[in-house]
Image 1 (cartoon, rainbow, N blue to C red):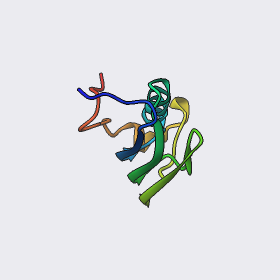
Image 2: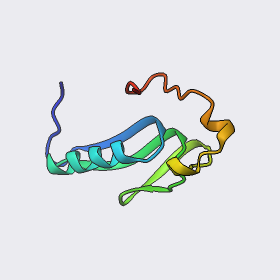
Image 3: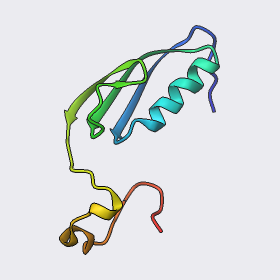
Length: 91
């Protein structure tokens, strides 16, 4: 493990963000421990957002994908099995 010391500045680095939720939770945690977020860097930004909370997001690449409500997924797309390698298990 590691400790966050009061006043310590941390740069958050993530490979891919889709919603930014995990980084937002992390910024809240860092602040609750007395730390300071120096910035947010991601390799691929899929979120379409330029900020996580109050922090600007710097990324190598931005990628936009269409997002559908569950009842609006096109039939051709619904026929393809959902696969999420490298993340939490989909059931």
